[in-house]
Length: 180
Length: 267
Image (cartoon, rainbow over the protein chains, first blue to last red):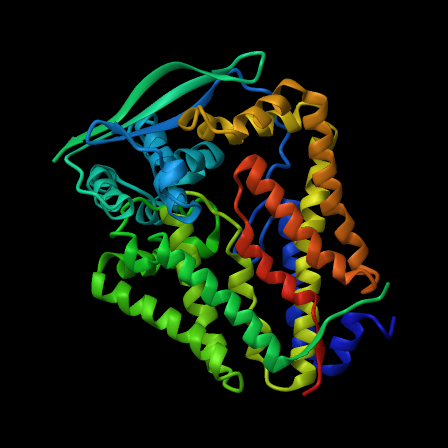
């Protein structure tokens, strides 16, 4: 017991001990609650049960009419901003142009949603941000892809694997098109 | 075998912030620092109250919305990291770096509409260096060691208690989900044959998944003994290399936490 980390910490500084203990306690409590508040992180990635899906969504980007292979031309930290924001934009588009976070809280809180509505609307996306997204994407892709973009086309493709593990295109749905 | 690498605080700070500077240079090179995001418009605070707080204060939006401010922010971020690397006696640099990086961390994840965890190591590595006194630093560095063990152990426990460890389709489903984009955009890539092989052989994918998860579970041993700390330095390198090659999940920045398994020697 005396050799344990927490005991040694307690002997050295009670303030530090309680700070660390609270950090540990919050981390464990929020882990059990399944709710993350930075810096009490949850490390639950890939822990949800996954079943084989029949189809998979792939973002298709065309710059000036040519397919932009962002898996080769953009490195992870860069690619994350592009694909993550496009997926979210598409979710909003499929949600009557409403931020899915608002819908999530409306469903969870029911009548109590009005208590946080004003606060939530300040920190989630509205029509103005939604409309400005396309210009931002064009701007960011020009910098990331190092080229002038005259036309930008973003589609959501649906692909399916066959029995031998190869992918086949099923359909393509347009998300946005911009002509400069 | 009981093998532990032991360094002074001064050396550990130099190593830590060399890693931080490498991470910042990488992010600068791939247009991912605040000044390079081109004033993003969509935000994603989701249910994380820290994100709510920063967004309510309008910090990410205000910084990213003014080019001169973003450049100044990035210069300060680099400056704090460089200061931490050079002036290891000055605690102000790690403190400023951690606070600025928290803002960048929240902003980057919010603008990318996904709260990634790969940057957590860079966020927290500076915290032990906030503290004066070698004994205090040593204890906080020890705390970081336990935090790193928790990262991998809790990842294992999540998969154990949610039952995904025993889910026969887990491995093949992850292979299919995470590789779809790469296969679709690179139909002639040589790795596609390997992905297709694993997808066509679900038992192999299942075993690969179980192997990876058990590798995370091994870290629980570290809570009880420091005898195998050398393993906790090597295993994450193997683990994150495998996940990058096979499921395109890049968590190399988290490897900065491997430094926590280096012991502390008094100066």
